[in-house]
Image 1 (cartoon, rainbow, N blue to C red):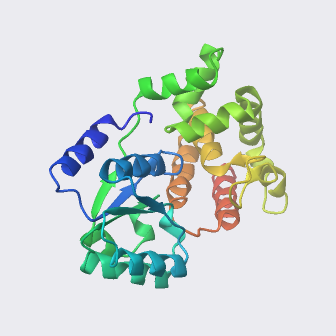
Image 2: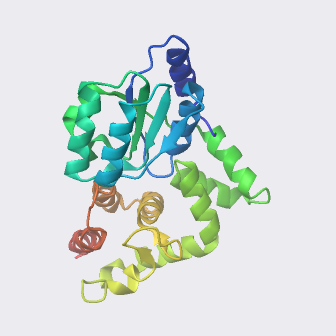
Length: 266
């Protein structure tokens, strides 16, 4: 795993001292490595690790099982941001009365996407910011022939391994050309023709043939900073923070961003 050495050390020492929480929540943005960390920590606790989905039936099944097991088992609930209210309520039982031999590790993009009562009764671990050196090493592992100019752009745009992997897959030059084209033509964009921009952006989920909206906005901000378009940076930063909210309508968010940008231009 890339980085997170201090956090891994903290969690490992808690496991050794038998003080590790029965219900833990690992928080980090998409692609930050939270699920990898959850699996690593789970296997430090026990060889018996069960990973489940977030459907209410699945959650109820592992809870029922957890109260019956005789040996230590770790249950991982990855990417739980879109968990239903019923599934979240089912989890409350194990936070109130933890089973004797079970540990639960849930991962989230943001704590706002679960119940406050769940976070208050569990232990929340937030992934630490990756250092320049860690991300640089990762970029070199993927492409040892990366140019200094491309690497500089990547390091200013990406703050986690997933972003770097995607940006290198897109092709840095092509991606920069696209962002530049958007910047140059913002004044001519309206809701009526915004689809010309949106056509290349993934406004649904996990369509890696299109540009990730989060990375696009990060790159847009970086390039606007170079052009001293500070108000565009402030507007875009406001919308990036909204992407952490589970179930956010990206298409509507993108349209609102276009409206705000064009209002500033005009």
